Amino acid sequence: GRYDRADPRVLPVMKAPSLPADEVAILLEAGAERLFDGHRGPGVARRADRSLIELGVGIGDGDHLSEIFVPYMDPGSPYYAFNFLDAGEYSAGGLAEPLMRGLDCPDNSVYFDMLVAGSDGKPRVKRDVTCLFERFAGDVAWRKRDEYSENVKESRPRRDLVLRMIAVLGNYDYVLDWVFRQDGTIEVVVGSTGIDMVKSVAERVARSSPEGEAVLASSDPAAGTSASGSGSASGEASGWSADRTDAYGRFIAENLVAINHDHFFSYRLDLDVDGPLNSLEIDRLVTKRLPDDHPRRSVWVVEPTVASSESDAKLRIDYERPALWRVFNPAEANYLGYPTSYQIVPGSNAVSLMDADDYPQMRAGFTDYHLWVTPHRSDERFAAGLYPTLSEPGMGLPAWTDADRPISDTDIVVWYTVGFHHVPRAEDWPVMPTAAKSFELRPYDFFDRNPAIDLPARP
Image (cartoon, rainbow, N blue to C red; front, side):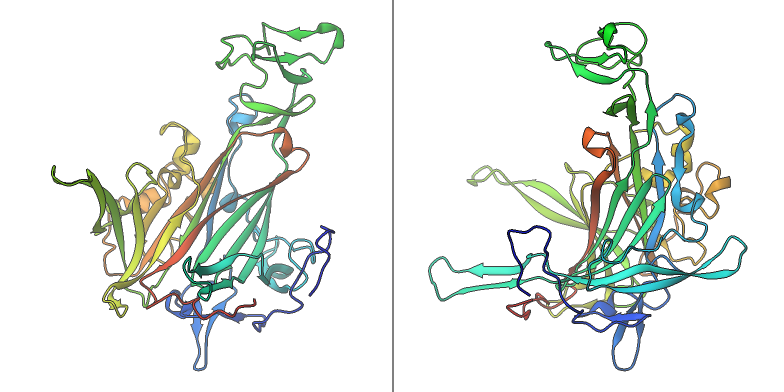
């Protein structure tokens, strides 16, 4: 409908979903039934008349957020012990919390309840823990205008289908979205918000000297600024000193230092691309030198490799040695003859900076790699192991993959790790703006052409 663009409080919303939804399933567009299969949670259950995505986010043997690791970087007591495996240690009653209608999700949302085990072991219903809505944000699905002809100009707007839940874990809230696009892409988004972990300190604020050196202002106005001693800015102007009050974090309010920390999220993705028997292809982009008599000196080419066992599929993002990661079906092909596949497309990411012999790092060994691939096992669902509260180093993915099992032309599970280092800032206080990280599952030779080519000119 119409709205006043001058008033930012008034936003356009779709009055009702254009796709029907009930309490268990939703209809998806073009070919989604070929990506998932029915033995997982949010997978596709086939019916005679249509294919459906079940709304079982994080439930059962399916695609879900498998683990969250949040280690804090302060060696002082008690902060050195703040190393949380949130999903495994604090998931009693389920991670999802009831959504606030009209605030956590737009007015055109449909809501779903969840059945969880209560503290007494008995089942209970949690209301409104998942919402489903269509979103139009003005994004362009595709566009082309001929620079030589005014008669050739086409553009199509994009509408997304968003499935959302929010996990509340201590001082952090996590907004977890599965975004289904009309071109067959699925974007997985985790947004971190909430309140930074802080410690109170005697110094009031940090300031910069005229030379650019960070110094600390005392709580006592008569004391001036401290330039040496405990809690001071001793050491080189551009360096770091353990004596600083903000050595392991950053002032975000008067007398409060927020502690540096990490967030790592492991997603378990049980993809069945055109059937259960899949393989992982690693397409490495390699520079090739051209002959001396050629006007160019080099080009890059694609060198494909099929991972045969688990050790071949322990992969890290490396921008100097780029590669495409694709799950493909060796028995199916598009009309051009290429195997049908889905690509795992990383977004911004991070690696753990802790030493390998640091105990928290050993408990969260899934952060050693951005990508793992294992053969499907119904009892391998959580990246840090089944009982992380009582875990020992190396449980979960490191232990399972030590067997180096075959993963070619079989039912495989992909594990993807999303992470970021959080150096707090003043804008994080009093409540941190949502910081979103994401990755995509993108069709790659899965269709015969762009599946969004026939989208309407109006969303």
